[in-house]
Structures are given as C-alpha cells and as structure tokens.
Amino acid sequence: AGVAQDGRAYVLEDRSAHGLTPAAWAARAQALYHTLKADCLVVETNQGGELVRTVMAQIDASVPVREVHASRGKRARAEPVAMLYEQGRVAHVGALAELEDQMCNFTGTDPKSPDRLDALVWALTELMLKRDAVVRVRKV
Image 1: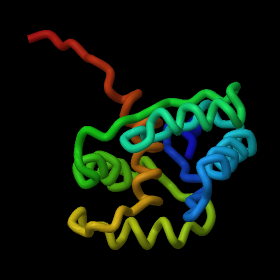
Image 2: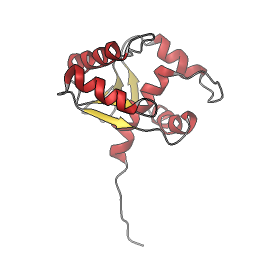
Image 3: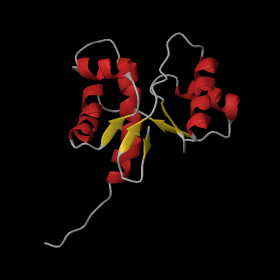
Image 4: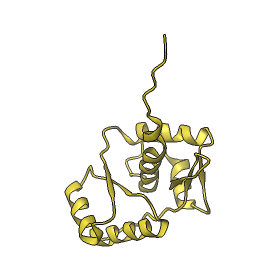
C-alpha cells in the first residue's frame, strides 16, 4: 500500500502466502519492497520477533524494517482502518479478491486469523493513522 499526493491510501498488492520457510517469506517480502520502491517493510513481531529481525537482515540488511507489536485484539486494530474506508480515504488498485473476501467476512470472533486483512490493517495503520496522530492544541 502507498499514499498518493491526494492523501488517499492505495492498496497495490496482496502477496500473502502460506507454507513458506522464514527465508522464503523474507525474500518474498523484500522482493516486493524493491518492486514497489517502498519506504519500508512493516512486520509484526508478536511471535518470532527475533527470528523476523535475523532472517530479514540475512536476506538483505539494507531493507528498512518497521516492527509493530499487537497490544490490542484484531477487531480493535481493524476498527480505525474500517473508518478510513468509510471516509473514502482508501482505494484498491486491481483485483484483490482473497483480501476483499477476508474483509467482508471478518467478524472478530473467528479463531482463524485473517492473515491478509491483518497485513492490510498494519500497513494502513502505519501509512494513514500514525501520521494523522498529530497533537493539536486549541485555545479554550
């Protein structure tokens, strides 16, 4: 995902994959980083944080990695991102059927982790919500 000059986020790809070794996963993520000319990779480090750091550095240490750690549940993390969609601040580029299926079926109660949606939430949180969290002081 990326942010355009109009201030909207555009979801460009969903390259989620299952059954990869850590090295194959890291190589795949870093290849996408280079293809999209991204600023960084956002990786969740709740499970295997040290492994993620080590493998990413072994594949290509020049790729900037931003680590995130979930302290709230998936539903709570997804709600602000859902608001971005409601406000028309996010658009999808091309067909992202599997991701969109997870988005439509997500209830927050299914024990199966929605991996594609989870990656989307982290990306949009970093791109759109972190930069929006500017402290503003107003006169009373």
